[in-house]
Image (cartoon, rainbow, N blue to C red; front, side, top):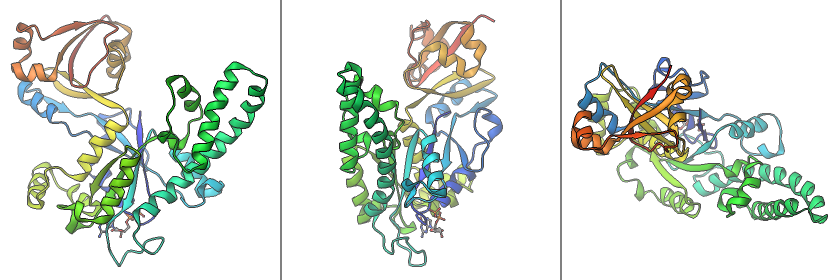
Length: 365
Ligand code: GDP
């Protein structure tokens, strides 16, 4: 399963946020494919469409889909020098598919900041620099190897060498690999290096309790937004402390509390949705009288593979996917109506599943 890692300097609110994630926690019994590990938190993906489908179909039960956040432990500064806990930090990042980088924007004189004052850009760069240095080491090794082959005019090696050169120069200028542009052909060489700075990132600006309703008044939030914009990265504003409180409430209490605070959606829910997107994930639904359920798939897969997410037998014996888009189903009020209007399609094995598809798989046993 794809997972996002939560990183950040000490005392920025990572554990508080991670606790909110595990508290709000999904029941792992529903998600046998998820990891059982104290550093992994399973979150359910909030999705209004699932609620609407439940109203329409009135099933016995409704099951949201879920994915994982990993709390990344270890020591950041000096990590690229490759000692002990720092090494662990890098190897944990290597295992995740995207990064949620928590940045401290809250003021609290009782809580020390590792470098003495709140400076979100310096903080971001401390971590990014460690990742860049680790990548530079990876690239340099490959660079030296292909350089020799490229001198012998091996065509493939010359192409790869050009990519290594561009990566080396970019990283030396302290630019993350994801900010460099490569052609589709060149990406093959970049991908095989599994660079840390190739992973997609979003920034999580952690603000004080009293700032959550108007976070843009916080100049640190502004700075993080400007920095992220340069990288085409997204920023989610949360108050980790409030999220930890919200996580202990039930749905109704949560809605009341959010209304009281004057915010339409909790920061954690926004973070979950943005991270899902960042991981390249999307949702399709199955809707029967027994169960209405959301399923996570990686964008771009075809119908048989999507069927295989439910059960490997569905993939093996795949015949057709009876498919209607969520919008068409919601507009027509029922499957029967949608069918009458010709909105239900019979898709074959080459169909590329889309976000929001409501699917009934037909298969041979
Ligand atoms: P970590 O080291 O990054 O995991 O940081 P923690 O989650 O342990 O938080 C460090 C301290 O900051 C704790 O005392 C938290 O209660 C406090 N803290 C975290 N988030 C907030 C916040 O949004 N507002 C305030 N005032 N304090 C926070």
